[in-house]
Length: 463
Image (cartoon, rainbow, N blue to C red; front, side):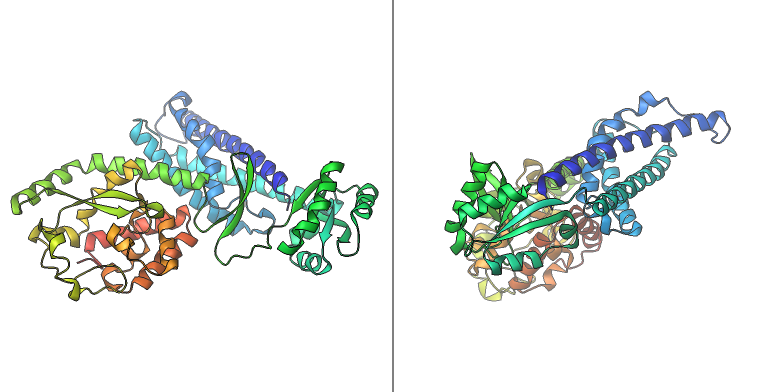
């Protein structure tokens, strides 16, 4: 329940797990290296010094991948199967990071046996550490060692509602010494309770109408040197997640409807740029062929640039291979009556403005390839809501529809893999985008990327 204690415990466990990952890798190499001498393996491998670069990746990124998959959340409630699933998903992302580092820094993992041995050892040690942690926690709960004495302050109704919302863990970790009803007790009597019960902290609960009265009690805690915690659930929101942050030196209560700044989001942006750069280098020959085909089949520039709505609606120049005639924008008004999309979006079936090579590029989604440069520049992500032209962003009427702009736009998304040309309702398109924003995780990004591959290869949902 107590945020600071949980944060310190999390950091300690991440340090321990980083050590376990490093130790597992060292021991895996030792087994493989010495296994050759005992005749278990036929071929010798290089000494550990040639593998040390992997420790620089495993130590910091291993715990981050585990954290992103929820490995450290409520371990006392988890089953072994769930922990194994989290370890497996973490291994996928860690393997991707290792592969990218090996590619960009031209490193090698010459022994194929080391990594499976490492995975088995690391999983065993991490599961053992988790079991020890949970056993220790349960022992401390039974002994009362981790129970903290608190005072609850507020109106009788608010205190009753607050206590009834306690989780099983909060019940075990909290000893409520006394409940102080501010409509009955005055500040002097409250101070006497502080002296009598010596609580670790005081929890204040109340609606917005009670804040003025609670201020006196909070001031008394400040004078007494006792921590005071103010419940902020008097601000009820349907979607936004409350959090605390600082604006300069001012404490602020923040309500976010999109993923907040985190290591998982940082890794997403880092991988976005690394993968985009790798694809740009690997597909440079394809870029050249497409550019040549466009130049030979129609007049005009190879790259089409258009102002699109980025995060929070801020405009940026999005790049695509040109698939239409150069005067396509001027013909848009004439074709408006053929629009098959509802809402502010404009889309025409068998658009006459599309060139011959453009139809092929659109069907295979190859026209989107230059957006890898947008990802590299930080304007877009690999996965995220598709960016709309600014003239369509300005035509959005429903306030709720603008929430799709709260996350950085992407090259592919749920709409893209759901048969994009079969989704003709803008409301449905927005619903898919909001589903992505509300449920975002690195694993969801990976699923969308993997499902995008057959869409690109077979042209499903593209015209």
